Image (cartoon, rainbow, N blue to C red):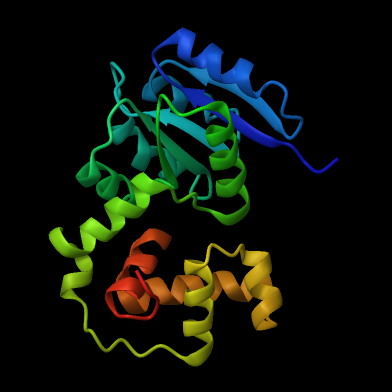
Length: 218
């Protein structure tokens, strides 16, 4: 069996935490490392644990998910974070994706949706659904962000364009490497270079750039 995906759930409602763990207990490729009641407790846990995925509630006492998200990314830059909330707020989703969230789920999502989000974020970095897609497209029209300040004619090489388009198709680093015939390490280097050239701060920002500049269809 392949390596298990290590998960931590952070939510101030014990019943919700237990419900998610119970619902996913039958998935053999998921391993729960622990659970936290708030962001502060999560950050303490991360001194000892290294999860692949963090399920992070937005509204919590002491330290909420919005404040916790960038702090977690400082400690574990490569961890994938799936935000959980009771509300579907487009502007909030856009903000969270821009500062490092990998997906966004409402807390009434069924167990299979949560499982698919975990698995897809682990394998392909992002899990896009109706909430994230709508938020990203709305953000193109309504939100002033760093992309507005960039030169519309950022010069991208043919290889950089190929990698960017494949990222927009939700291909994993390994898949991109095989398609473009380069090493996974080179894919990561090109991704970093794309961020510098476009001014994007995250992979979500790169996808926004690609849509805004007509490199892919919205």
